[in-house]
Image 1: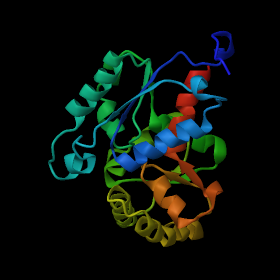
Image 2 (image 1 turned 180 degrees about the horizontal axis):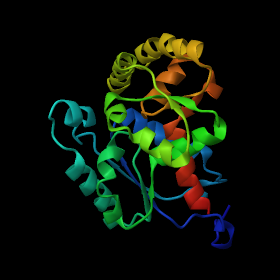
Image 3 (image 1 turned 90 degrees about the vertical axis):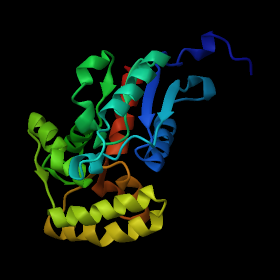
Length: 239
């Protein structure tokens, strides 16, 4: 088949810039979700994506808890590089990074698909009566989800700090390539939350949907921040 200009009427003209690597497996999963969910019939109907994968961006948890290096300059440099390359809008598949990104968001001057905002909106649509929120320790400490939930008048239910310490260990397992172990780790933890309150769980860390998949838990009881970010990007392309 000869592809003509007329046959590419569905070809998107906006380029997405993705700053990834936090962590690498979550970024790969995000790209896979984008490709799987985007409504294209052939290669040429898929959108252009610029991916800058930088796993060397300083650890967000260490920055907040251990006086580690501030990741802000690296995040800023990465996003401005994507803008310089010609990206029309931006996304970052890492929840905790948004605490630092929020400090310079107005400087970007191009649309930014905010993972926290879109995850809260998705949760509000799926479970109007509220949802559990699990995340890294850094994301919990910064109250990122609480901030955006409050704007939407949405109720979040929080597990204990000790519970989140175990969730953090599962996240670290995913980052280390130990997916099966991470699934085994979170399965009993999440079941214990549902025994207390049977509402969906927001996976407020981009590694957690991978662990959840390994745990073989009900798909209808997770609200994936990766899925929410992908949905936000696809909606921007199509509207």
